[in-house]
Length: 352
Ligand code: KDG
Image (tube, rainbow, N blue to C red; front, top):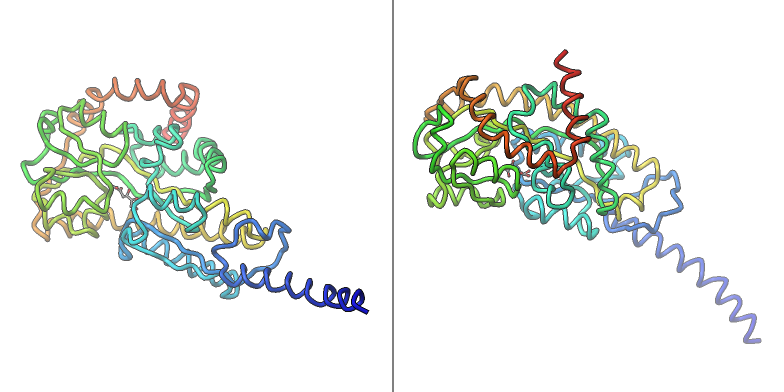
């Protein structure tokens, strides 16, 4: 008697257990990690936490909103991207670690803070590397950009492409920076990046590495005299309220890299992965365009907001590049001469 009851029991309970476990994880969506290795082609209900350090009104924030719309559209509303702006989930490094741990699904940090994890990303921190966005796009969307994305999975991350942070300009509360000499003694906040630190030191400035979310307070309290960021960020974070001078140094270009947690990614079906990949690329094109439009517009807005803006001549930029050259050479060795040669060859191709 008992045995067949047991069998029935087993017959009944087992499938319901399987059903429950499958439903449980997919309804929480974001927290699945690898359970759907079956790679079914279905799209499941998922909530996807996507955090960035910049504001909702910044081109990166608007790009993320566009990404969420495209993902929702392509998944029939099943994949819900929940954006978190202004470092509410932490700064670039903290959010990247959260992805590696599977506690968060998406972040789009600058590549500069990632150099501690993948040193080769430091090639994008070489000052005066790109002359314009088109050169950056050609390299980032080309074999060099892909080579660096391919290094991410071993760190628990999946890279879906590059968005634009942009060309960085210097602001400070002391004086206009018109010559290489003018950097001397300036206390400048930099990203947590060894190339940036070494370059500013070489110019005679006094650089301090700091997470982005601490910058406004550090400027306001005059812990540092200045900082450097693209114009869209200077405007969106109202640095004009705590900085008097904006010097158009255009001294380095910073990419954003679109990161996904590998733990989360491995639990997605091919169909879901394709939706996220296509949306990251499509929203990325839109984001770059917004970034370039804002870059043109923001100078006048910051002037109107009272900042004293000065151009920096090509001669002085060339002098700055020359002064920093030993730093670039030192790190080119560290990051790999072959990779740096390939990078320069890609740039030369565009300049032809
Ligand atoms: O998410 C914001 C960051 O990406 C940040 O890196 C912005 O350029 C930045 C900076 O100066 O930290």
